[in-house]
Image 1 (tube, rainbow, N blue to C red):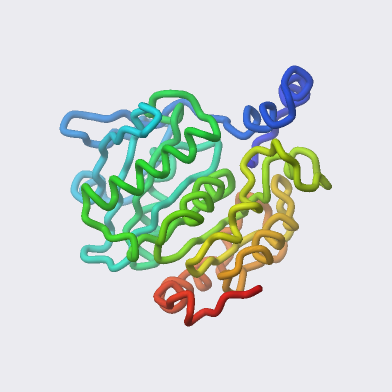
Image 2 (image 1 turned 45 degrees about the vertical axis):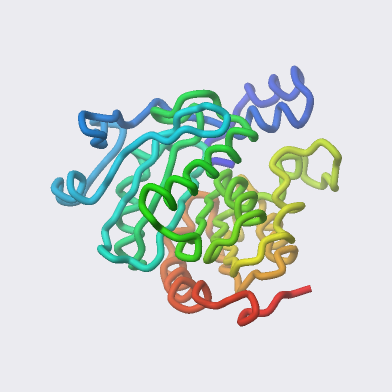
Length: 292
């Protein structure tokens, strides 16, 4: 679920724990925090760990940092990146498993600027400056807290929130979209479930981790699935299966030759996202039709 290899530690974990527990353990690789929270809730990027190639004034005036509390009593770091004043949509972005929001801030700024959206993101429990430890249950509590904060603190209604999940971030995104009404859902390199990544060929089990394939049929908003055909971490078949099981999926983006960590470098990526946000995300489920 990341471009980094687990090496021999993965096989040791598999032998020492039950398969679902081992899958969950291997899913999270929090890096050393790339940021700190400065006075007045300012984001401070640590030199050598995160880059900000844009005007420093943007970092001070258009990015807000704060902490939210989850139902599992963890405190998670949140960031609101607003390159577009009065943007209609806000992307609620759930990042991959080997980065934190400090490392992603520059990407969020560039993405929002190009798509005409603002970007709200958060660090999972145990990532960055967030407390607790990463786990499947915490993933779901974390995104719920982020979603509620976006609505209550910033007054962004659910119908203007587009969930964007990348890799492991597709797991909480699917979970939230399966139980809340939002504008749209973007799944970038999604996984069917943890067991199906760790043990290809696994069919439905009663004790799987991250079972997005079981939840995605309950999603009611327009859903765009993006996947590289040469993904070496989460096989392309996962994206295809998620697309096929989601009743409100729109035309997917299969990026020929792309792997797990370079999909966004292809021109088709931004082009498809723009079209999705400008047209399909504004349609109701009746307009796009529900596939059966």
